[in-house]
Amino acid sequence: MHDLSRGRIVVTGGAGLIGSAIVWLLNRRGVDDILVVDRLDLSEKWKHLVPLRFADYLDADELECRIEAGRGLGDVRTIFHLGACSSTTENDAGFLLRNNYEYTKRLALWAIEQQARFVYASSAATYGGLEAELSDEADLHTLRPLNAYAYSKHLFDLYALRTGLDQRACGLKYFNVFGPNEDHKGEMRSLVHKAYGQIVERGSVRLFKSYRAEYRDGEQQRDFIYVKDAVDMTLHLAESDATGLFNVGSGSAHTWLQLVRPIFHALGLPERIEFVEMPPALRGKYQYHTRARMARLYATGYDRAVTPLRDAVTDYVVNYLVPSRPLELADVPVAAPLNAAS
Picture 1: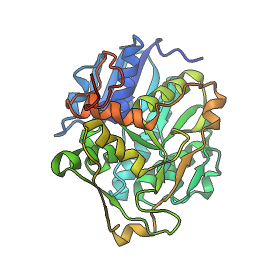
Picture 2: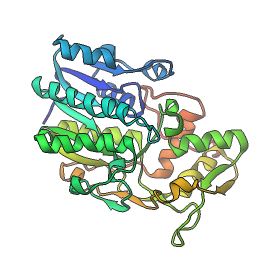
Picture 3: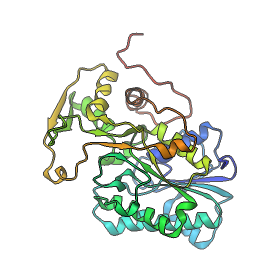
């Protein structure tokens, strides 16, 4: 078993959604010898770091310079590499390959040289247009990513397989992660965050119509996972010495309606859902059902149940979105809806 309390931990993308939640969970386990790496620039991601404890902060470009110059970063034993451009609409493939592929290669090879545990974010987007139960044991050469972001992630998975890095590193195919500290993600925010904003602004939510007869409007399905569950799985895999690729999802498919209805309930508001036309460019690529196969994770001994979707959405809305609050170290129980009787 890998001991996360020994040596320094590097978390790239440490101010982002999953990265900051990893720091949060490590802190709650009493670990704070953490080097947070990110690119803050003009964003307000820095607010996610305010409640957290860590040893130092470093810009992502400076980390790369230090690695290339052979300058020390302390006794690094573990690297969680979550930093990437995650925009599925980014058209600059060259930028994505430099930022997501080449950077990851350099960091992975450095980790191996340091004999450090390397855990990195792949993506469920690498499955492309596949539907139904998606297996992390699929032949990588059969996958066909649909956008440049997914391809940049897939390319590193292939590199790891080709070079044997997959036997020394752990890659995580995150599914539809939602939760606190995603406010900086723009159009890449989860539907929970977007829908909450729509409800506050106009009292209703807009969802795409269905263009397949077997799915009614709003009943297209996805594997949604709360960020708290996603990072719990992440730390388990880091500690378990597991290698190769693993799905990180709930293992269940839920509809968009099941995702947004708890928002209205949590706010004590009547449901108002509008169905709008899907842009023609999306219709041929749109997935109507995704569900992560989780057998590989469970085979490592992970046995904790994921937070039920309704409870996860309620917790996110009441404890974080309404008070505009980031993840903090104090344990906050899952809140009751705001209209619940006291």
